[in-house]
Picture 1 (tube, helix red, strand yellow):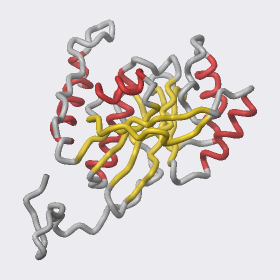
Picture 2 (picture 1 turned 180 degrees about the horizontal axis):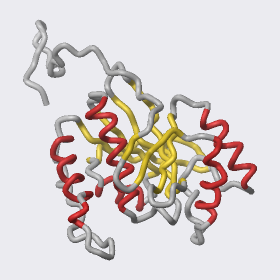
Picture 3 (picture 1 turned 90 degrees about the vertical axis):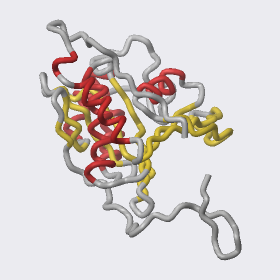
Length: 236
């Protein structure tokens, strides 16, 4: 709620002093300790297809707008198209230990004038799932929007039935904003969309949690975490 009112006594939003908007999100690399998040390129398609083909569960593409793909050529065609897009703005996640691409993520619904962007098209291969790289990649993308560019709001949206995505959003510090019923039709079926967000005012606290978790000393000689990522929920 806000205590601000206009001359007519109506409640209005709090002022945002000297707001001039933000710069567009650049198509440049984000470098981390365990992974790099770099602009998606056609040269990544073979490695990504191989990484995604290791999925034995058959669930990788269930909630994605595209896929599964019939073969490497079909996936390469999708990558070629994705590389031409500026919104979504696609990136490949590279395992620094092997140099191989192991996943894809993007910024989308980018609104520099409002300081708002979403993370989406998150596709993690088995080699990336439940790894430090997976968490660090999401952290690097948050650093880009909040620290590098000064965005005010960062969003996560998913099919409301995607329990794994909802759990991931909560673990990463996103707060649940609400449900948009019958928001989309994809793959011939309805999607109710769950909305989550991180606001700039909460970012310093969330960033500190990430940095404590990612620190090398939080992992033992076998690479197992000593303490889990613990981002307290935001109640506002």
